[in-house]
Length: 373
Ligand code: ATP
Ligand code: MG
Image 1: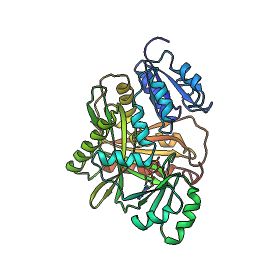
Image 2: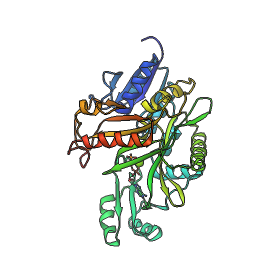
Image 3: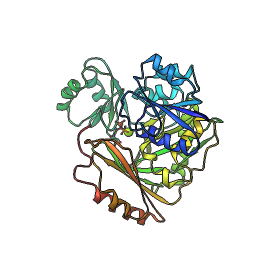
Image 4: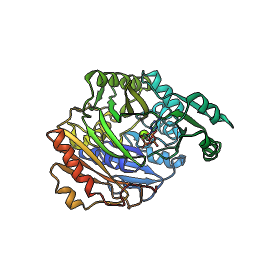
């Protein structure tokens, strides 16, 4: 191989889209994933190995210019080991903070974000105590390993507490208040190797069955003050972690302002619209940051929407017939609850964008979303 080579831990759709953007900039990609059929096969050089396989990590690192990860459940030791061989961004600190809900909340609070009232649940009977302190309704969330709403359980009534304890089965968790949010938002930003931070406009997100369904950006009705405050806090978070690369913070909008739910130290599903709807999209930005190159402009090009294609695909020909649409498919086998691709929708006005997104949504087949894994 000649030219820069970027290593990516994880070979799912995020790795795939990083590889596609890297390739466009003349950067080749090598991705490591335990699954031989990981969907980045074919767009980058795929190494099939467990994240814990030391010898494989050493072989993987050989010849890389820099490395990153696309998945926060990569063991931090793997990132540390890789960092001994090649420059890895974001560093292990970002990963460690994001992969444990307690450390994550502490980092968010330290950066100035408000978070839902919560208690740590670890020993026997401690859920009952936490419910007493936080109140009902609340959400029991495992400290580690959750994604797409998996690894959490809503507890509405006192009678549900013992069932929730059984479900937890001794695993470390937190119990937090259920926030009666007006809507869900996210802020996706990035920090360059020089420490400069940039942000895309705040995005409005709708989930169905715990999985992201749509994103709209710029989110309507977010005041300049709220946007500026979210940027200040997210920048502080990235600074404190020494983060280099893209980072996304998921937010709840409430009557009393924004509450941070979690952050991802990587490119994020709620930033997919930026591939077509921003001057320089999140995948290109991440590649630039990790390689120490100049960041691109984050300005929105119009009004963008994103519709996730989950479980089974619609008739792509019909989707492409809706003006302003661009389709991104991940070449994954259809399975209930699985993200198979997304549609980006661009328009000049918010109303036109909303109408186009609505047109795409009615094309989603019955089996899209809902259940499965
Ligand atoms: P993902 O990986 O898809 O972001 P996750 O499994 O890490 O999800 P969360 O983001 O914490 O889990 O929760 C998934 C969704 O559940 C949130 O987007 C939100 O809709 C709802 N939710 C989570 N926590 C709360 C809360 N405290 N109050 C109200 N709703 C919540
Ligand atoms: Mg989330």
